[in-house]
Amino acid sequence: GLALGQVLDAGLFTVDTGRIGFTGFAGRNIESQDNIDRSVPGYTRSRRTFYGTEVRYKGIPRHEPYAYWVLQRDWSQEKPENAAQDYRYDSHYYAVGGRGQLAPRTKYELESVWEFGRGAANGQIRDQREHVRGFAFDAEVDHYLKHPLDPTLSLEYAYASGDGDRLNATNAFQGNRAGTVDTSFLGFGYVNSGLALGARFTNIQ
Image 1: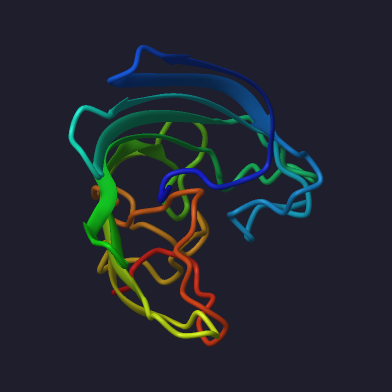
Image 2: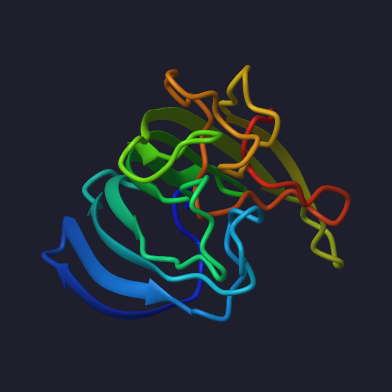
């Protein structure tokens, strides 16, 4: 989803009662992954833990609504440490969405995510973080043409909130202005935008 789409070292369990499916997980990222914040000293390594749950309802023919929650905690270390700037970014995400079939050859998926948390602003030191309030949305419709080559027509709209006083969309340094709420959405998932566009999904539509 939009909140989390990384490879994790994690434990996962799933319960399915027929109409309701439930999934829970806890894990951490691969520490050799680059930090999402490229201004952190030693950004080529990162350490974050993730926890989450998802509930899916299967009682509607050809449609599956769902809701999930993801908690992210930042344990990344600065190497070397910068006493003049904190970089921690702790966030949690609440999402609702659905996927299904509109017609025999037409499928859809949509998702809305609300982000909350605390993050270090530009020039802030430890224990001076600001609130995070972000939002993201994605909707896609795919139509599978009846043809020997199986072509697909896709229509997608995606939105991720930004912050007007940020100079950099993902970093603490030159990021959110101190004393203000950070309204930029910053998740750990992705939007499949094809070969032409691979931008970080923040401050974009």
